[in-house]
Image (cartoon, rainbow, N blue to C red; front, side, top):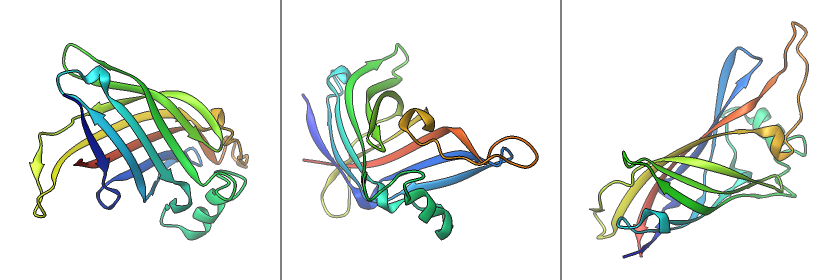
Amino acid sequence: MSTAWKIDPAHSTAHFVVRHMMITNVRGGFSNIQGTVVWDSADPAATQIDLTIDATTVNTNEPPRDAHLKSPDFLDVEKFPKITFRSTRTTTSADNEIDITGDLTIHGVTKPVTLKVEGPTDEAKDPWGNTRIGASATTKIKRSEFGLTWNAALETGGILVGDDIKIEIEVSLIKG
């Protein structure tokens, strides 16, 4: 039987990793993740996800870089304040790995992506009586495919910001 779960924004995160100056990775994240998941352990293919991330909350622990990421050079959060994911298909492999394909919208551009999902965990009661499950998901995208093309050439060759972005999502879900 399908069960509706609400994403708990206080205990859920979305992070990204991108190559900087071709020598190191920079990590950042977003807070205020909201949405719903409909999950049926007997029929994982019926899974439905509706996820919204507040793009204005981007944080790399470097305020000038965060301001640049919020600017029209990157996310343009005044024009595109939300990042969304809507599932379109779920598949399960023989070893119970779950792939959830859906439409990811960043910077007003929507592209299909596939999330590799770990979980969900077994149900557990929290101290307040809520039933919870958790899950993790990862994917990789090319930022240029979402219109995020700003860059700068380095004096030594190469570019300042890599095109490949790894996305990591952790969700705590509350039943009901």
